[in-house]
Image (tube, rainbow, N blue to C red; front, top):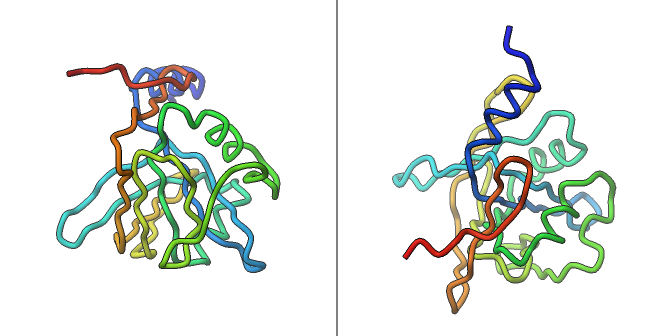
Length: 161
């Protein structure tokens, strides 16, 4: 049996990007989650995946909405990352967002946004594996420094050039 605390420590040793996945609830309000479990999956068709915890109050809304926007966070979006990592209905209070042409809630200032429709869902233990078919890609006009998550901390990806 793998001890959960050690497992989290080992997995936290692997640096990853940070995303926020947003959608609209039945009342038209923005909901979302912060997720570091995200990956590109396929080029043809264009597919990505993320893994929300089944215990998340946002998970069933994301699953049922059938569409969502995945934001690859910029280093300066720490407030957004922590807001959407929390519980409750008003995660986006004070956060700048708008509806995209596809009707997804899009946060300002991300390094990129991937708009998707639900393609498949798989069981992943205590997390779902949500596969989205990419329907639109949004890049900022100027390059933005991405955010990384490592050993429980958020930070900027150092310049590797």
